[in-house]
Length: 399
Ligand code: PMT
Image (cartoon, rainbow, N blue to C red):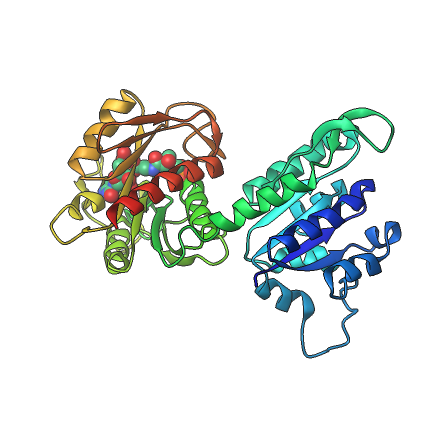
């Protein structure tokens, strides 16, 4: 029997949490309820204990079994954390990593998918701070079932009403199903720029932040895959659970990709690999007065093209990215053919607000048959969902 945790916070719609609990039980789940101390002021935790058949957790230090750290062991047992209803306060805490009660501490400890269903007064919901917190949670990989317009506890019509328990359960089940869709698969993702040194202090590089590749790694993890993340230098934290292989140069990235490719079912090259490196690397810092008037460059190895050789790919799904500034579809289609890819994801890196270093992107996904799918401008997390959906279809065909 799968176990899920239901976090309940202090919204007037708290009574709907009983139906959420019952709904998951009817689907065969074992449900552990966690209430915030404020929620416990609205309804007695005993009600949820009676419904769930287990003691409702409220106090971080309430468990007298001192050998177990309750929130850590619960985090390891559950397949899904649902927070419904979620107040503006808990959303703000989760978004900023505050962990001062059982529920907010559990959130930081879980590796399973998290579903949050906000409920609050319209002014609070539409407040820019709440909206910014919601966006932050979405960027961190949390799934939200956003509230509806309707009659609110403050006796006004407006946005902020908790969605129906059925909708929450439906979302939770879909999330659980997705969280296993890449189980027993290994996804190798490259991310970030490479640095090609001139001397011990200077290098040639590019504007890649790693955000696109890290978002893809996070999405693959959420679908249950083992993820190996070969990353050039970035200022990002790897998504929890990813096996990070930090590299600096294109040559090091090529070595690491080849070393790990045999165990991967999918390779996604989102890294902006340098096409050229300085022909010479000085062991000492080059003095200003000794600097050459021109730099001699030599090409780096094209990692994807080198894998086109027999034996390099077999049943694997190979996805490339194309950073273009013009003729996006034509140039990307050429790369797809020349590098013998299953899929290419092209982005126009000359456009403001997308591509390099942005949280957003707009892409064109092209497959071997020439089918073209164009996305709107959405978060890199949304793009990674689109890409992984296509990857799953291709994996199914290669069975
Ligand atoms: O990191 P972010 O700031 O989030 O930005 C995301 C991104 C713009 C870097 C990303 O979306 C992207 O476009 N990545 C690919 C960048 C790139 O190198 O494109 P390209 O068209 O030059 O290369 C085509 C493909 O060949 C890429 O998959 C690249 O990883 C691969 N390549 C390139 C050069 C090389 N020597 N070896 C390679 O394998």
